[in-house]
Amino acid sequence: MNIGENMKKWFPVIIAVIIIGSGLGIPYGLGFVSFTHTTASSSANLTIPSGQFYQISNEDYAPPGQVDIYLSSWYGCPIGAADSWFIYDYFSGFINMTPYVLAHNVRIQNGAIPGLLFKSNISFGDKPLHTTIDFYSYYLYNLYLNRTAAGFNDLTGGIPIPQNQLVSTGISELKTSSFPTPVVNTIINITTVDHIEGMNSPSAYLHPPNDKINTVMVITGISGTWILNLYIIEPKSLNGYSYQYMEENYGNFLSIANATGNFTKALEYSSGTVPCP
Image (tube, rainbow, N blue to C red; front, side):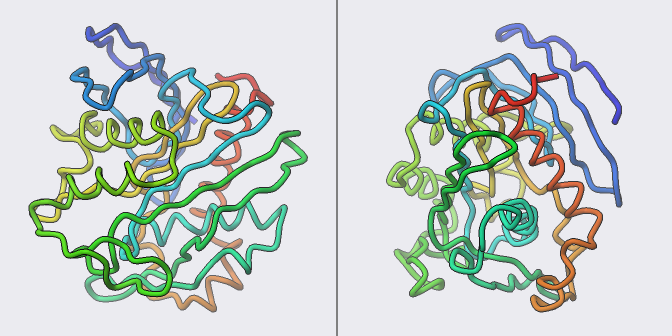
């Protein structure tokens, strides 16, 4: 991995160290930043690297003695489908994931991405971390990005959403989730306030006219809060594989193994098991 130091920001001063691994042309890795947003309406922008587990603050939003993971996505998201495999890979080392997932193909132009939907919250004890891990998922939009999510009995329809109101509706949906307020505010900030590195825009506004709250993950524990914004596994790299093939061979994909390794490190850092770099 290569270690680089970001330029200083002056709202307030930020020193960021980014550790980047490379494989198959996919950006993934670990990094940390000392800045903390205090409200969802903060006007101070960070520059967030995409496709990395990145420490956003030293705050702990989990109950004592555990690490909480929050995944915000939508039913038709290729990023959510691709990245579901590293979550499945890691969790399968501790529990039987069959009761918690639903096989789901997400259609893209010229193909489909095989993935998993997480249909309930998950809690288990992680022996290496010596702590409890709680995983929470919430889906903001339906399969076709034109309605709110309606639960696992109806992936295609909830309340209709005008195309120009996807971001505001996604924020409203987040606020009605069971996610803690600081986690909701973090998701809002990193998608609608903070700019993605190399872009002049937050991630929610990268794909007009389909601007939306994109798939993100928040990991929080005694040593701070980490985020993942945008994909760590390139969705198109899984295009054309069947779900059955992925289920039998996901462990042979280098991109998934790398993502799982970096997810593991983020959990170790947030739990305090391993000192942050």
